[in-house]
Image (cartoon, rainbow, N blue to C red):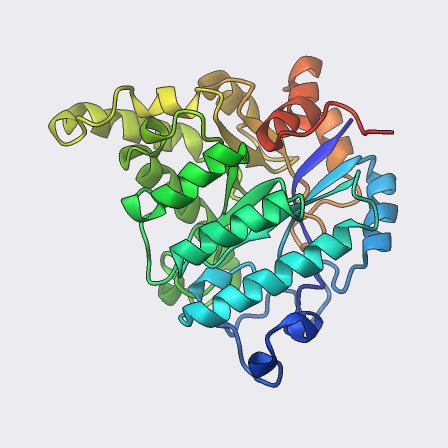
Length: 339
């Protein structure tokens, strides 16, 4: 079985969700922060308006059995300032995504969207989405307005409930409003080439040094869509700073590299990127997840699986782990499709 650990729906538009919103919001015109960059060259890059049926046809073309579904239109959702509107959007999205997944619930696995602008409501919605709608993870973007520290105690209720529910926290990078350095780029290619790495590196550093993995010893966390080539640099820096500033980090009982290699932390890689074997050696082959990023412009569709299978720097055993075993363990999925 092959599990795509991070793909995206594209029908999560306001117009799609509008009928599911409370009456008072249905006629509102503006909901989300947007930037001015041309991200798809006028619609020439990636795919839009992809139906569930098209997902299934493309999965068969790629040889993918299960897709774990993340948003597109609502990817930078947590940059929104109005908490009450964010709460309503999250509930509408989760109900819509559940319906989308019913096209083939064996092959589609949804990730819950929650309004982290209101933590109490976020926890309540996560629990509903998992217990009532069958979601397999909770989506936590790397940026949460107004720049919240993902390792801070404000997130403890969410992480504790995710641990109790047995689902992973899926930290997905964003490169929109609020992202690190967003206001310092005038060209989208430069922004997109650099910002994802620093967004995820910031999330990793804050969660490690904030003691998240110490306080929640059973919590699983996946860091998604930033590649892995930057990890050797980051791990070295984190271990070095842990040693130098040990007096400020007495709450940590292990080195950062030990938390990150513990089997509770996962990183998705791009099918053709260099450095995958190095990271497998550094943190363990149990830490890596296959992701096609379908149907966005940087997905190598329809060659994602083939690129991994044909790699000569990865053993067949490692390929099997990243394509199936690791994502199954991360998301708590069965090793084979149910009949």
